[in-house]
Each structure stands twice: as structure tokens, then as C-alpha cells.
Length: 132
Image (spheres, rainbow, N blue to C red):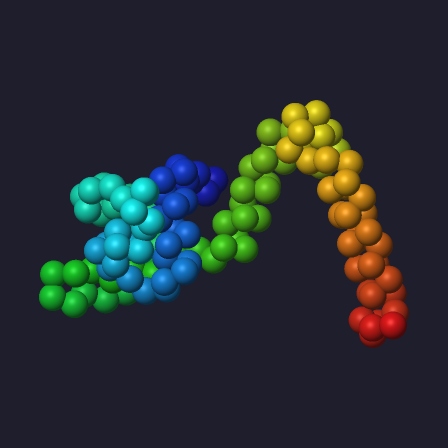
């Protein structure tokens, strides 16, 4: 079964959970920057959607407040996004990078920096992880 996609709003709420760990809807609402504040019920709806999508899990109830924590870590989420993005380009990293270059999201300078980082990583691995 394909994992459900998250909306931008859901992702924003999940990011707050990654920062705070276990939190209530109210705590998440209060942790949002002033210019991103929405109604309590909006945050509550997003939290319940994230729970349905298995991105959050309910861990405890204190009084009337339900506490949730991330069921999906940031690394898992990013890996999922990268897979989805590559799927849009037929699984070709080259087509993806080419598109990023064409639309200016990636520069040749960025590519050279990445190439250097890859080279350094390969050198580290081939020398057994020892620093020169």
C-alpha cells in the first residue's frame, strides 16, 4: 500500500512535533509563529489527519488533552519525499537535477560543491574512515 502524502499544512504541524516531541494540540498551536497562527480547531483537524495517516500517534491523555508524538521521523519523511519526487522524473536523478538547473533552483556552483562533498566522502570511505 502506498503511503499517504501530506499537505503543506500537515507537514508544518509535523515539523512542530519534531521540534517539541510529545505535545498537545494547544502546545502545537502555541508553538507556531504569530504570523502562522490558525484556529485551534484547524490545528486539531490537521493533528487528527496526521494520526490517520500514521505520521503521529496518540500516546497519552491528560484531562481533556490528548498528547501526540511523531510516528514518522524526519529522515523517513524526507526519504519518502525524495522517492516521490524521483517518481515524477521517471526515477531518473539526472532528469531531476537537470530540471533543478533549468529552473534556477540549483546552480552550477551548488553542483560543484556537491561534487566536492561526494569526492571527499569517497576518499574518507576508501581510507577506512580515517581523517587525513
